[in-house]
Length: 530
Image (cartoon, rainbow, N blue to C red; front, side, top):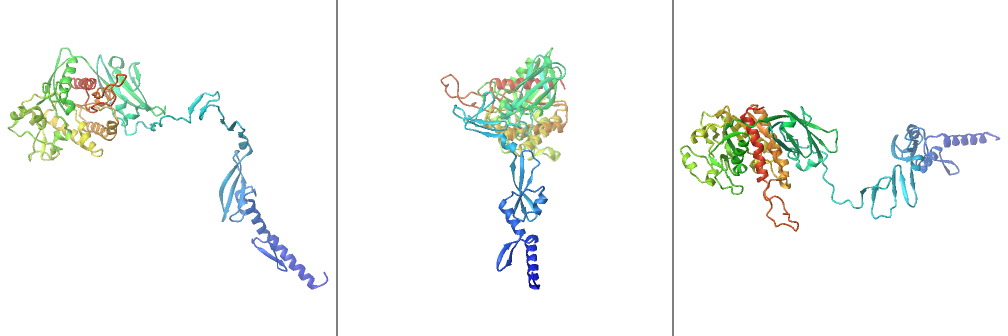
């Protein structure tokens, strides 16, 4: 270094080295004579990109500080199952890319020619055909290669849609009553997913199963039903029951009964109800203008007991809320009506009259009034002690899922008010027949029967009169038996293939069971129990 020129070259060289090593700018530099070299910042950036995360930093903040945008870096993981977490620097933000397993995690995964183990799971070869899930001892728990039938629907919510029952139970003092659990559910096909039990509140009597049997002598005056999903031991719901024990009458007790209903009532209804009331020690007088059938099969028979069982009618047909079938008995035509044949007589409505200006608007329907007092006077009928409303099956047929509840509720309230306006001391029993267990009726049970039954219960609660009883007959009779047999030929084993011939109208045990259960509630009402 002999002069000023050499000192200048040295100064330039030092400046160039400083910039190469210390500059934060990622760039290529001319170091003289047209030779280009990367600055140290560029070297580090390129190295970080090339290593793709191999650069390990103590924290994500340190990684961001040492990595250019777009580059990757790694940070040791706090999870014992992981070694490091890989991040990408996105304009100063650490974006997680993936985790790398730790040595202990990798060690847990073992494989050879015969088996592979990952933690407690071992997959191994077998000489048996198929794929199996087994215990450590080789017991087959499930065959994955042959699953069989399609899995059943998810029934983890068997109570979806609500429950359909009433807490007052009437039972003969020396008899029993059966509660069919599937008919308490909005989705009847989910009953297999329910664990049901019944227990006395005053004795040691209990029972469980799909049919709960309550014996009057064993259960005392109060009981409770428990239901829970089969897959949920803690999901229990309960209903306390008041048990009305109906004593056999001695001496015999007179009772006058008006039974209002549809085709199910016409088909031996009044006759069977009378017979079961007689077994309870009553001497019933059945009231009505239309004799029902006494035949198990002939619906046109008219040798049964009086009542008002009209084939095809719904609640609104009686109240004139529905007028597409309305044909009134005009005043003065009573004798002609009584002389009619059964088919013609069934089409007439003996309860309604034309409205007058004196009638409150709340009881007028389409210009007519449902008037039991008018009905009694014009036909010279006795005053009933008990009036039964057994309607609803044809509301299912004619009303929509959206309108059936409001329709039935309004007609129930109107009938309660008008019956008591005519006969203040009458007891009213509201009941509803069930329907057979079949795919089409089960669908209607969910969409129509469920909102209708809930509307019936709401009307009972809103009317709030102790003289009105609810008989939950829909749940007291089997839906799996007591309906007409199919007409097919027997198979090789002697069985008749096919569903019930009629899934709406019970017969045999179904018909008898309906009126045996209803008779007990009628008797309880006649005795003012409850």
